[in-house]
Image: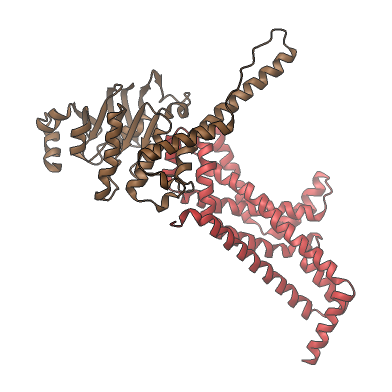
Length: 274
Length: 236
């Protein structure tokens, strides 16, 4: 699903990622662990080009999305991302946070259709060979209605439907992060990228967020999680990357990484955190 | 005190009975028009400049636009507004052979002038919004433009509203120089009353009062707007 080929990332002189090549298959749940400054987050952010790779390419569903000529926005819609700092839109209510992207994008598509139809109509006035006009069946009201229903269903799923009309500033960290997750889900992504989703949460709220991620795991969502929750990584991941100094030092099943790590640096790291 | 009462009576005669108030009303109207329309133009120009300045500059076009905007801001912040008025009215207009009413020239110059200041206010507002907001929008597949318009700018506007109020107040007061190019503002009206009643103390005092009232009203308006925009901060 995602092919990472010879990925490098530099910030000026600093080499953050050094020639990473790996493949993420559909249905895999990948946990990325490693010490801070190892390039975990940068690697994850390169997967949807939030950071533009310095070298190499990211092939997502057969398209090289690191290529500047590709419309990255179209591809990002299929990759949900969840941030450490939640990043809910502060000026929108919870419901609007979830509906904004689906509505905006559906409306953009609708306008494109209408424009194409309009052009064809004009063309048909003069052209001998008439082109068929596509019927436009959706209306803006329908788009909004569908987005709203979907958003409410997602909110019900996490038991926060009563928070639909409040602003993010009134929510707890755990609630914010769960809403950030369903906001990403509202786009029906094919893969979810989590950038330390529980690192800025109070300890008592970590559980509710991890439970929601586990539900996604049960649904078979492909996901990549940068995390410091070793127990969680061991429980849900199908593959674990241990990263240090910009390379994936070890790429193995959780059992093997956590019980018999091969690399001395992995051993050292796990001895410190477990 | 008797002489002051005399002065008030003289002023009242000129102001009310001889129809001086119509001039004051026109002056007030012009002052408000120049400030309000000027600020509106300023906000549009300022927002555009601010966006040009914060846009990532990978390509050639933003770079060119950026240097133009820097030049523009430098030009309008580097000269007093009176000089700009005089140059616009007595140099530029004759040069291009255009004959505009002085009020229109004032509105344009004040708009262009405040655009330079608003651009810096707006830029600081945009930079004050957490970068995570832009990242979240982009990660959902929204374009830079849409995220800017729907997420960043509304939050930036909320942050800069008090400063923007300041700019509006400054603008209202700065309009008192428009008589340099022959536009009739409050100063012109009260100067007329003073000249015709041979008495300047009361007219200028009343003029000062009108400015104060205007500014207090604006401050109040800003307060109300701010409270409305702060709705999303309140814990409900």
